[in-house]
Image (cartoon, rainbow, N blue to C red):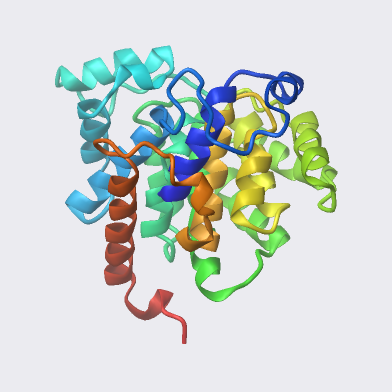
Length: 312
């Protein structure tokens, strides 16, 4: 949860810039800056992630109706939501059937909010089904749904691996993601497989540029979710993963949220440098609230999983 907040806030000021524009403006973006929102503030991506997590904690498990109502009830328009979301949230608040409001969006926004679901179902294959279900509240396009499935499975695996392993087996993780994604979107499968075109031994700026050459990072699930996953898999610590993601350019807040969730799930909150958290917003539903949600989510996950997630 904290990784999502950090990555989103880091990427916020560069949202919409190409890799070249970002480099000309910030050099290497590695600190919280002012942008469309004040420095350290988060966008719709973290707000939605908070909403989903709060629903899981309230119900004790995943419930689509609860998530839909929480998304609509805590909707804050100024955080930068996509235009189609306004109508969806209004229809949910008006009491229309919560199964219907989804829009044929192929964006990565549904993926950027799914982190808590990946944690809670870290030991359960049903995470892919739940990832698709929560995406359908706002996204009915196969690519938008597949992006959420891919991120949910990736966070689930990163959470489990972080408890038992010191490194991420890249090829094994990709195979586990591709299996459920292949049932939803061939396009996303093809995009994930293009990760093989990126050399893992590049320096930080060269790696960001290489990812941006393979993926346009424009906010579409097919062009953005694999880019964030590459930033996580081709680096070796939280900071490198998130900074690589946001320096790719494009939909940098989404990239940061996605990579931050993955890196946070694997490396843990203690691996996040304090300089990246000290200036985060801490007003209502700010940093302390996000940390508390993460702690409660961890407790619920341990309760639900029993000994399955406990090291021997």
